[in-house]
Length: 117
Image (cartoon, rainbow, N blue to C red; front, side, top):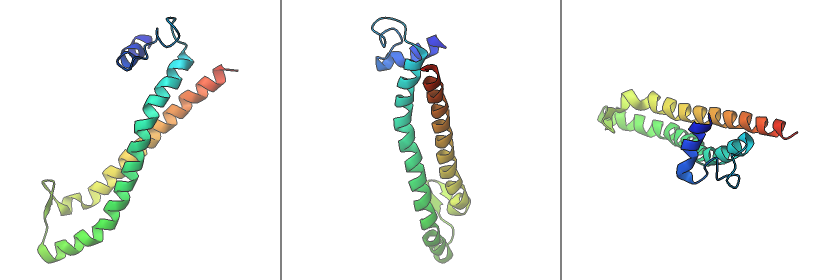
C-alpha cells in the first residue's frame, strides 16, 4: 500500500518520506492528507451533480412542450426522448457515488481518530 500512496502523493510533493521531515509517514498522516485532497473536488462534484439534476428536472416541462410543437430533437447528438429520463439518472448516480466517496473518507478518518487514542 505504501508504494501506491507514494506514487500518488509524489506528484503533489507530499511523498511519504517528505511528509514527516524525511522519515516515513504514519498511516494517519497519509489518510489525513489524502482525505483533504479527495474531499475538495468530491464536494464540488456532488454539489454540481445535485444542481444539474435540479436544473434538468425543471427544464423537462419546457423541453416537453418544445417537443410537442416541433417534434423530437437532438441534444448532444442524442434524441431528447432518449435522454429525458437518462440525464436525471446520470446526475443522480454521480451525486450518489460522490456520497459513497464521502462515506469512505469518513470511515478512513474514523480509523485515524481511533488510532490516536
